[in-house]
Amino acid sequence: MSFPIAVLASSRGSNLAALIDAKEAGKLPVEIVLVASDKAEAPALRNAEAHGIRTFALNPKTFPTRREFDEALFARVAESGAKHVVLAGFMRILDANVVEQWLGRIINIHPSLLPKYRGLHTHRRAIAARDAEHGASVHFVTAELDGGPVIAQTRIPIHPHDDEDALAARLLPEEHRLLVACVDAIARGRVELRDGVVHCDGKALHRPLGLDENGTLDAA
Image (cartoon, rainbow, N blue to C red; front, side):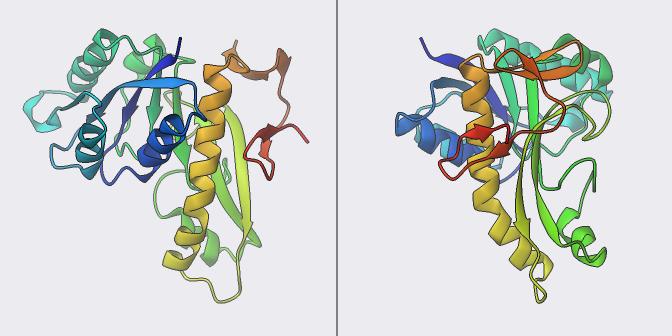
């Protein structure tokens, strides 16, 4: 039986598209039971609908507090039967109490080599710092912004003439591969969060996993 997940996205949803493509190609043992957004016009919702996936949107402005919005959102996620939640470009900070109820069952993809460059404008900041490399991280979500335990990372070099857009464009396909690999590992029971520590194949990780040429998580 496929592993049921929900995906939250705020905009175009290219990472969602990568998950859908991998699932439909038989490469990802999941069932995307729900795609939800804080923006009714998000292209991610239209893509999900085109693939027969249930969707809904909630407007945060109709809720008195962030916590009430998040509680309503995750109540709908729970009703969907999802066992895990993937934040794929969901541009909101989640309420700490809601995160606590789902601890170990939410992951996020972030375009930096965490703990570097939490928050926004990561490509610009990596170039400004004259870093030799950039990358993306998939991590378990905690109440700390982009601060949860990192599962895996992918790395690319920063070229001398890279600007923000060029770097982002080169990284995006690697982000897709990384997210698919991490969701696959979670769905197969290879990766889990225990007592605040990421475990892979039953062993605690002392550093993030990498990604091999075949798109498989690798401890090397």
